[in-house]
Image (cartoon, helix red, strand yellow):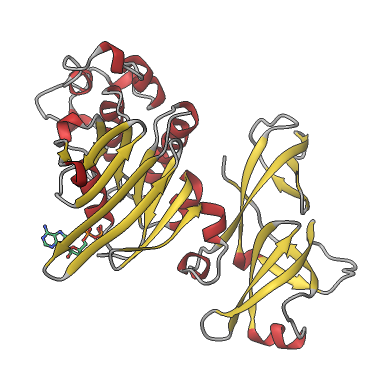
Length: 359
Ligand SMILES: Nc1ncnc2c1ncn2[C@@H]1O[C@H](COP(=O)(O)OP(=O)(O)OP(=O)(O)O)[C@@H](O)[C@H]1O
C-alpha cells in the first residue's frame, strides 16, 4: 500500500484565506466537498504547485514542498496527473497521440500504468484513431483521464471532471472512475459538488468551508453526521458495508448481511456469496416504527437505537440511528416524531423502503 498524502497549506488572498491541514489515505478516492468559493480548486492547485501556498506537501515518500526547508518543486517535477472540468486535448492529435504525449520523458522506473492499461481501464480501445472533435464530451473526458494516468502519476488530481457533462454522460463516465479506484494503487483527490458522486466514489472525505477544513474522515462517517451538511441534503443517506449471503437469480433478489441485520434488494448483476458490497440507504427511504412490527409489506426491517434528533427544515426531523455499530439516517415528519414520542436511546425498527447498490 502506498503511503499517505499530507498537505499543510496557507494561502492569503485579498478576501479569501485557505488554511488547511489535509491527511489523506494513500489509496482510493478522497473527495474535496463544499459550497462554491470554499477553496476546493485553490486547494487542489496548491497541492499541484499551480498556486503558491506556504506550507508542506508530501505525497507518499516524495516531499514536494516544505517551506521550512526552502523546498518547492515546480508542477512538472511533482509527478502528478491533473484532470480539469473540460478535457483539454490537442485538437490536431489523435486519441492515441494525445495519450502518448509527454510519455517519452517518463523514466522507466516511474512507470506504474502502461498506456495499454490506461486505454483498457477507460474503455478507449475502439477510439484510439479518432480525432478529438469527433468524440462526445464523456469520451473526451475519458481520454483526458487516460492521458493523465498513462503518465504514471503518484497522485491523480481531478477538479470536477464530470461537471461539464449532462446526466447521461456523467452516468457513462462514473463506472470508469469506479474501476480506476478498484484496479489502481494511485490515490485520487477529487473535487465534487455532487453528494451522490461523493457517495459512489470516495472512501475519504474532506468538507471545506470558508477556506478551512470543517471535517475530514471516512465518507460513511461524515455522511451520517447530522452536525454536518451532507446528511441534510435532499439526497442525504447512510452508507452501509455488507456481504452477499444469498442471490436468487430467478427473482433477482439479493440478500446481504451486516452487523445490523440483513437487507434484501433487487439486483440484475452477477453476485457471489461472500462478495463485499456497498449500499446507500437514503434518509427519505427510512421510516421508524416501535417494535414489534406486525404485517409490514416492507422486506427490510432493522432494529436500531435512536442516537439523536435534529430539525431538518419545515415540518421535518432527521433522526440518526445506530444499527449495531452502523449509522443510519431517517427523515420523518415532525408530526410522526411527536406522535411516536421519539427520543434518543429508544429502540426502534427502521423500515427501509429502498436500498441502492453502489458497487
Ligand atoms: N485567481 C484568483 N484571484 C483572486 N481570487 C481568486 C482567484 N481564484 C479564486 N479566487 C477566490 O478564492 C476563493 C476560493 O475559490 P475556489 O475556486 O478555490 O473555490 P471552489 O470551492 O473551488 O469554488 P467552485 O465550487 O465554485 O469551483 C473564492 O472566493 C474565489 O473568488
